[in-house]
Length: 317
Image (cartoon, rainbow, N blue to C red; front, side, top):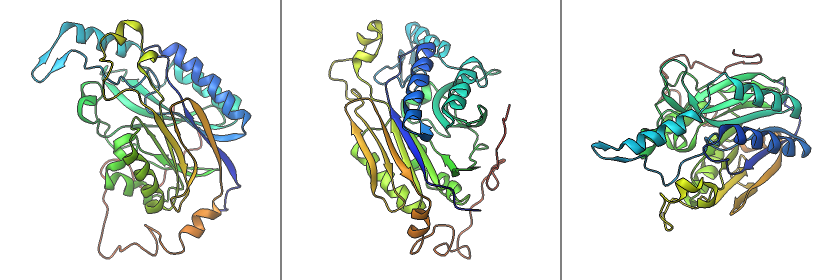
């Protein structure tokens, strides 16, 4: 494959309009337009920016118990999740087409048949098509109150004119075999939307870049208690350890060098140039699926429909 031209990538660190999918979609569209003004050909938004990552809320649960008011809160969150495809994905697809960019957005997806919610990552092409959807494999800790588990059949890397693009959501990135599944497909631009703003996450972004010899785009929400509706603010202690979410979005080179960010304590858009020649130079002394692999010792087997690189250049729906 011919080496793609140098292009600009953008990560958007933003807060949702919390528990309001319509206004959040409007905000995403506006910020996509802002990133397009920076000539971004690839634009990444955080994990579940639609309708927000509900830090500090327990949905009326204890071990062995659920309260009626917690079920009401879950219903409210469910009502602001989106169907895929649906009205909101059509709007985001149009935004991608108008921006002439690949647009990747973290959402809470409402399954049309089961009504189960999933933490999902949606990929839109510059032609205005929804071309891929990945469901998070394993929600972490109390996240399991909200989101079901993905089945792993969507762990494909997309072969695009910008290069091979794929990614994992938040702590999926701590799963060595999930990462290896992407490496085995030759991933070049690795997307890591998250809700983790700790220093350890920065170390992981650098490690994955070095391990995969790929560009890594980390993207988080900036979220404070003030971003919540007033009736939800009163449910969160002023000193709650999960708030604020200070951000930490960044872009990392294939040798682990920070090219942009980390950005903390505010909303903003980070951009950098992606030059595939840097991937080749980084592979001189390490290539996880090439000269540094030991296929005579190790073998990876992935169940389901994830076999090789997915060549998705048209709408899936």
